[in-house]
Amino acid sequence: MELTRTAPTTTTTTTTTTDNGRRETPSLPARPRAWSARLLEDPHALGEMARHAGGPFHVLHAETFAENVRGFQNALLSAGVDGHVLYGKKANRSGCFLRACVDTGAGVDVASAPELNHSLAAGLHGEDLVVTGPAKSDELLRLALRHGALIAIDALDEFARLVTLARSVRPARVLLRVLPPTDPHSRFGFDPDELDEVLERAAEARTVVEIEGFSFHLSGYEPAPRAELASALVDRCLAARTQGHAATAISIGGGFAVSYVEAPDWDRFVAEHDDGDYHAGRKPPRHYPYHQEPAKADMLAAILGHRTGGGPSLAERLSRNGIRLLLEPGRALLDGAGFSVFGVQGYKRRGGTSDDGREYGIVTVDGLSMSISEQWKGSEFLPDPELWPRAPIVEPVAAAVGGASCLEYDMLTWRRVPFPRSPQYGDLLVYPNTAGYQMDKNESRFHQLPLPTRFVAEGSADQGAIPTWRPER
Ligand SMILES: *Cc1c(COP(=O)(O)O)cnc(C)c1O
Image (cartoon, rainbow, N blue to C red; front, side, top):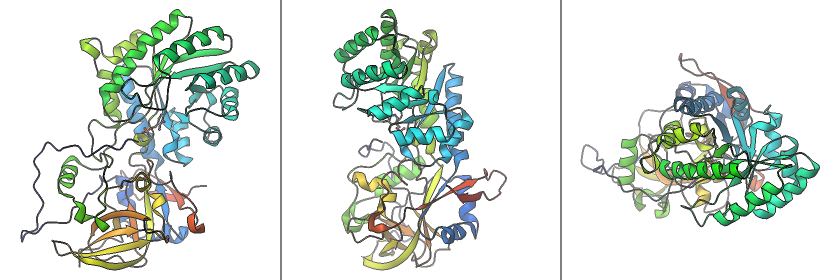
């Protein structure tokens, strides 16, 4: 979830130029996925979906999600660590990913009563849920207790309410969320003194509260701070056991890195793009690092292999001390598992031409920038949207993308994206890899517009077959 400032690139990159020496409009192609590439190559599939939807739509692929889950599970296995992957549900609303959690044995990290109910309805057991989020309502705590979910407690008053509820409902399974020493201004978690206090109170309430361990969620995408805090919490678990607590689990939260684009494309783009490549000069002041290493399961492997001060690896410390590692990836499980499609409503020229001779313009689509959430953090989702149907380069243009509302700032993309021809009414505009936080986190019914339709695609496309699709209910 963290936005980082552009990291200085270590490679020396030169500006890409055309044959006649003019600067090319920067582009940032997304890493392709077999399943979505097959759908886009097919001459009919996307058009049929568009007719069916009658407006913008999202296409989801639960098999890709399941593959990502298995990647994390294999990293745990290879490191010899007992662990549990719990999907951070807030990153996407769709039920198809919950059923993939059931199929792969993953749990779900929920933060509201509707998220908890949705997970149960999809077939998850209460014990496979962890309830996070600050200052949870009594309603949510009661539901979590009833279903035997693990509850991450964030503050002393919340703990007191939980104890009262647990006396009348059922003993509570608790993780204590820790304020990270590397992130002292976080509004979440207990500081060390509060942690001592809550552990004492928990010891007094032992008949109704089981302290299963500790949790945290860090911003940034570095493996080392996670490994070091987890290692410190191994010591916390051992100390808590002397007070009679079970202390057998540590949750390292989510925030696993994702690579949307290949390294050379990213390095080139970051070195090249400037204010002039954006409508109204609106180059985003900060953005997600769209290429990262190590990412996803490789990042988990790096965390598990990390040694604090030349000692044993985190993996060794966890298994030697009988501690289960919980992780709550959201974005990383959704990598490659969905894309978003908007209908082109119009195109108009705006403001001259680029150095490589492209006419500048603005495309207006039939959806809202709320479906590309990065704009709502004052940033921009940078991987290139693609025009469909695909066409050979005729008269290339560079165009920003505006939404269907009457708001000046309702822009899906401020960047002037290179297109092979001018977009026209009836074309589709495809945004790649939007399942993690982009497609539905900020969606609203502004202007009384309906929310985008959701389709679920099935079939891996490995043998070249076109995935089948159906509306998600
Ligand atoms: C948001 C959140 C996650 C998921 O984060 P991602 O960046 O999507 O992996 C996991 N745990 C907690 C406590 C969170 O707040």
